[in-house]
Length: 178
Image (cartoon, rainbow, N blue to C red; front, side, top):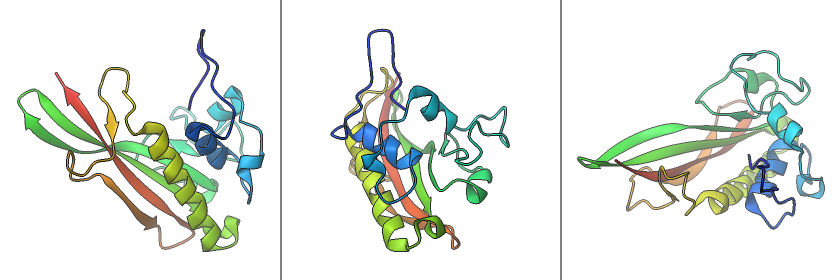
């Protein structure tokens, strides 16, 4: 979510993929990149809170970022959402494993008014996500990669719920060593 730290202020320009990704998640409509970068409070307001699963800070937006596989609330309220959860683990030796991290980017076709806009929106989010994370070291745990030769699950494809939501599933790999 790119939050401020004591000696770090997150960027706010659209040249940064994490800024574009957050704008796509936070703002609805045709031109989310024309909106200002969401504040820290706005970013936190769309992050799922398991202690208050039915009471989001912003009821009109609902929760849009879910650090788990499935939460029904997004099917009824959220227009655009990102789910992040762990996938398959492949053992590469006694002390090394290749992990997969699954990202599901979905948007509501009815809200976007046409599936073409919804597909474009989630594809732009996919590009921003890969650009923001590919090659990034996750606090010493390992480095994200988008390489099927390292992990067989890496890749991306279209997803939908055969209803109102469609989008993209992106799987990145992460090397873990003990």
